[in-house]
Image (tube, rainbow over all chains, first blue to last red; front, side):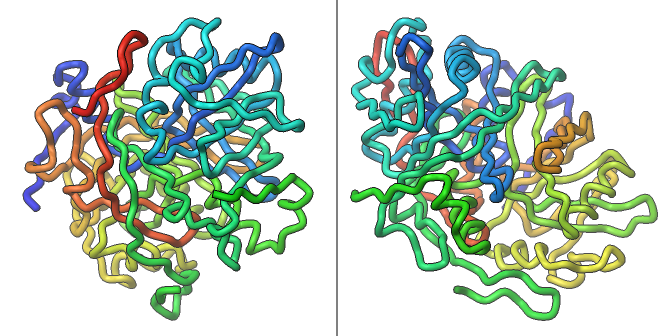
Length: 212
Length: 212
């Protein structure tokens, strides 16, 4: 492929929305989830996040980057208030609703009602799950790290429960997300399903990886 | 789909490798890249990372989570030494080589030589790119945040140059990563190509999103 070169001057002189689309696409496909929260009065909230990251398996920790914008502020406030949140995978049946949670609904409006997804509660977690989501897990807030350089926040949570389609759990613990119909995102607004290229064995220095 | 429920006790009592596969799959598809670095003596290094995250568009910041393991330690040391690193997308032609960079080669061994990828240098960055990668960008280290709770590190870098296939840049700045053949990862070892479901318009509270 013929590659085009961009230096920092080229990037900084891009029109604002062009640059946002460009930089958001640059890093590859993103880990997305709908985060469900409630405040202490039971007002629930649902918002899409595109920076979900695995931080550790024992204890099971997941992180998410939260930006200071209007939409994400409600999620952050609720998590700090209750200490709980849910992460819910997005599938092809609900991706338009998921995207729509990015609109700037006021705090006293439930995105569930507005966009037509169903909140589901489970006793352990003071936050709603998305009924229509196939893979979902509940977290307890463990740490909030302020990233001062650009005013974002890294929230770290401990996974305290999970719901997974029974037929998507392979015998080695791997969850077949393609079978579970989970989507990935590129840029700000492009949703993709996946097609497996291959699973590879654990890499060792004296032998090439093989398909498993 | 019939969902199976797991509480924290169920998760913690899983066999170690089963739990690692399970928890690594749980968060959805991952943003992956090969990170190229050199030390000040010019010894280069290449390693796969699965927690690349967009942090901001102006300035253009990307983060990556680095774990304390043997493999990732070389990358971290080099970045601290020189202040530079490259991120290179993985495509179907190089995913086996990319996976193999996760093997524990000693520091004085170049993964490029061992696995058959080609280092490429550009004047601005004291670190090698992967010639066989279609989308790649160079970063200057901006901040290192220690995540003490599980001994990982969040490195934040400023994008100072990028190489993108000319025919994959759409007129609004979006980079068509599917056309560029970039892959995504699930779990620790499952590589996937993508198939677009749809691009959606900017979400507004008074109208549903439409395909763009």
